[in-house]
Image (cartoon, rainbow, N blue to C red; front, side, top):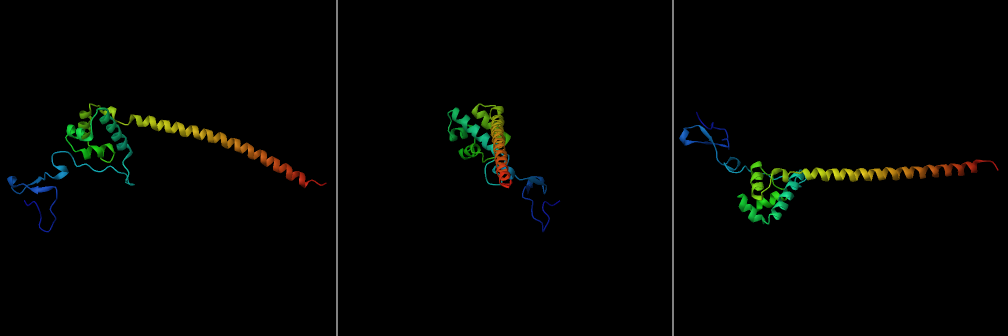
Length: 166
């Protein structure tokens, strides 16, 4: 059995395993080998960081500062680079569950402490503000409508007086 047919392109994630004859073996370079999975950038179609990851990152940054750690110090505790830490804090880096667990362990936090439960409260506050603003706008429009009706009545009365014979 051959690993690669003549004229076809070899599969990039399979490499021949000499110990097993011609049977293929998964290449160690796939997904960063056996270590951390390859991280992808977390940006929207507009090139902006994902809102969820931005919120998560800011909570992680705040926790790091409260713990009195610098980015490089946290990176050392987690076993990664300071660039990765800063990318996570800026919301520009997708985080694997394993990576998030290591970050939380290094900061002495639980998952619930960094999940966006607070974002829901912020969203509800925005909804309340919009509701209050729309209620005020409705009152203003009602008042303007009354003024417009009075103006219309006054205009009709004036026009009606001019139409009467003298």
